[in-house]
Image (cartoon, rainbow, N blue to C red):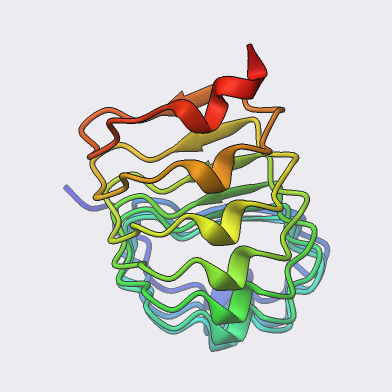
Length: 191
């Protein structure tokens, strides 16, 4: 049973609110949140939210969870440069270009999305955790410079060439189950 919370207008006056968890509610319109500019953490996971324009001015956000929503357009997030954690698991997202300037990101979850092109992530050098399981990604070359990565999830992908990962010496977790990888020589020099 979906909780009855759907109208966020009563929250509009809570202008000092810093954390808000609305996950698994009936929320579809986040417009009332636009004035909550002190928010640093916002969870809208598994809601009916699809339009992110009302979030564009929440520039203090460091954590944003949109997992399980119908979100597809990330362009309203381009100015949220303080984001360190962004969760998009199971969304309709396919274009990551709006994330290119989010250089503070340390965790990015794209599991179960339609993402195939990772080029927008090439400059996100602070990333330590990247979740790409069950995406359309096959080319990992954009990850070559992400030397801070400690966790990389590639499960269930058409990935076969790991050579772009050879310089990722900080990796502590590498998930390759159900991939087309048959050659691990990219990591030979580590031994």
